[in-house]
Every structure is written in structure tokens, then in C-alpha cells.
Image: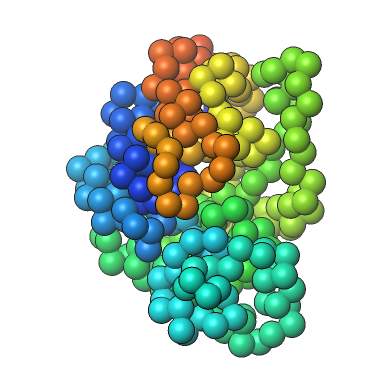
Length: 280
């Protein structure tokens, strides 16, 4: 059976993102969104989600490059001078390994974000992290441990088969995600051991920010059996704080609402839903 979760990351980052999420769910193939609980437009995102009970919402943990939930003064090893989570992921990963205080702050912040999501009253569909930072073994351990207490049932594992991309766009040379591949494999083992639902594959890694209508329709035409997550970054326009340079946000929104996308899902015979729909 082909099962498909179509996710929008960064829900709550801006009104432009939130508008696109609502539009792509109402008019297109989007089935789920990952909420940044402390981002500038999080309150607006939560209100939209309450009006869209069929939209499955998960937690998009922010552990790098954006707004923490706890006061920055309580996270001196994790935040920068501007009060945001640090951007230097490699150095931060090393600090987590070497500094017990950093690990304690990490656990506190992860717990605070889970608690903030629970306070929304929305069912927790899934969990993932900004920049896929939850593949770091120490972060993964904290997420698995803390998430259990908050009813976490599904977790993104960012693994993307090259052969699907090559079939979808012949002649292309998609950028491999070799920097996270070994950790992603380890995360899959640990998540399954914890009884969590994980996707068999996650599409959107190599073409992150460039999931245009042609690519999305082509990927959907190549869906294999099993559970596939196709993740995107839609927005009605760019120009908001926290946006990723070079991302074609409006094109990704268009990819989710294009008739070709719905037709491709129907031709593939894929059942769409959120992770919680398939976890049952």
C-alpha cells in the first residue's frame, strides 16, 4: 500500500507561511504541518489549525537558528548575543558532547517546546526538527526520552533514495545528504526500537527550497510502496524574518495546489493523511 504524508515545515514562522499552509491544505494536497511553537506567527498558526481539524499538526523543534521557548538567559550555551538559538551547528554539536551544562539546557528547551505544543490543545501528529538537527545522536536521545512523556508517536527520519530523484528528473545530479546519512540510519533504528512510526523515506531533502510544481508532480509519479513523507516549505511570498536565502517559497506553495499534483497522487493510488492517521 502506498501511504503519503505531505508536510509543510516552519508553520508559524510568518503570516506568509501560515497563509500558504492553509491554502495548500484547503485547495491542494497538503496533509500536515510542523509548528514552530515560539516563532513570530505561532499564535496565528495555532488559530488556523483549530479551524482546520483535518490538518495534522506536529512539533517542529527549534534547536538552531531561530527563537527559543525558554528565556535566552536560561540557555547561555545554546543561544547567541541576539537571544536566538546558535547557528554554528557543528560547534554546537561538539559543545553538547563536551559540556554537561549544554546538555541540561538542551533537555530543558526541548521539554519547554513540547510543553508549549501541549498547551495549544492540538493533537501531536509528529515530531521533527529545524535543519533536521534531531539526527544528532545526543539530541535524538533527548527527543526520544522527553517526547515519550508527551505522547510522541511519529518522528521524521530524513532519508531520501537517490534513485527516486533520478527517475523523477532524468539527467539531474541531486545533492546527496551524506552529512546526515549515517546519523539518520542510527535514528531510524532508535526510533523503531522506541515504538515510533517513521517514514520509509522522506522526499524534499536534496531539492529543499526548490520543490517546484514539476518536481513535486514527478516525485509523486514515482511513489513506491510504503509510507512516504514529502516535505516542503510553502509561503505566499518571501521577505519575512527567518526566511532561508534562495528558497522559492511561492513555487513550493504552487506545487502543492497544482492540479498536476492531485492527479499524480490519484494515479499513484496513494492514501494521504497525517502520521497519526497511519499510526492507528
